[in-house]
Image (cartoon, rainbow, N blue to C red; front, side, top):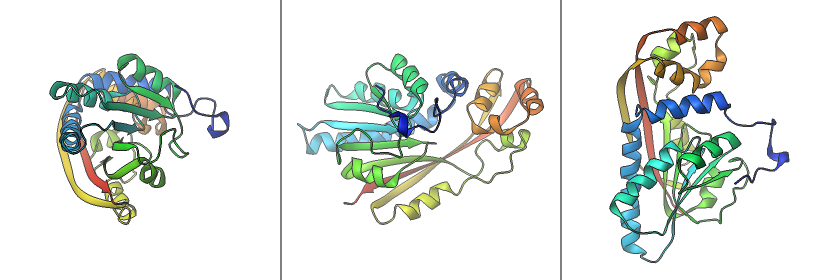
Amino acid sequence: MNLLPVTHRRSSHPGDSKEMLISRKQFLDRGHYLQLSDLINELVENYLREEIICQTDATRIVLDAGSGTGYYLSKISDHIAKYSTDKCVCYVGVDISKTACRIASKSDPGSCYIVANIFRKLPLVEHSVDVLLTVFAPWNKVEFERLLKVGGLLIMVTPGARHLEELRALANIASEIGQTAELRKQELSHEFDYVNSVAIESMLDLRQPDITNLFRMTPYYWQTSMETRTTIEHIPQLIVSVDFRISIYRLIS
């Protein structure tokens, strides 16, 4: 579903490129970030179990803001289906990329994917969302506050300081990462209760084409020279750090 007006676009093809999206789908489908996906599934399951007990007749909405190829949302819906026959859970993904939503809809037809700009008012009723997920995606505090129910769950995944540090070194990327989670915590402190945070740190032993797909799905690919790209795309093996910071909040009011 494309609800992105032309006036809300900064280019004719906003969002990640088709090449980035294909690489991301191929990499994620190989299960390299399954540990992160499993934790997200558990968090959503625990919250929905609590909500089902308290509100048996209510429709629940799980929203992935910046859903990309739909990997995490599809994993959530598959996981929830294993423990519950409740049909009153709706899964909605929003992304500014039409190509991303097309890929996601094809692989996850049970969810609804909407082309829309997260920095504008999204086409959902205020205080209608039970769980809002954002994974390595832009975020809009005001819109998240408008969409979430009071007591609704916000799951925010950001990179830790060591995330892909070996790949960044190869690409000669000097940018500092790892402060995002703390900065967002400060910005959310008035409207959201901070519940807790979880860190996932591990190493991936990658071969081709996983190395190239990982590189192409990151913004680093577009910040490097053709020579560097060619070098990385021909590396036979790379052991790389992954460092996820999962922050959990609940909307106060």
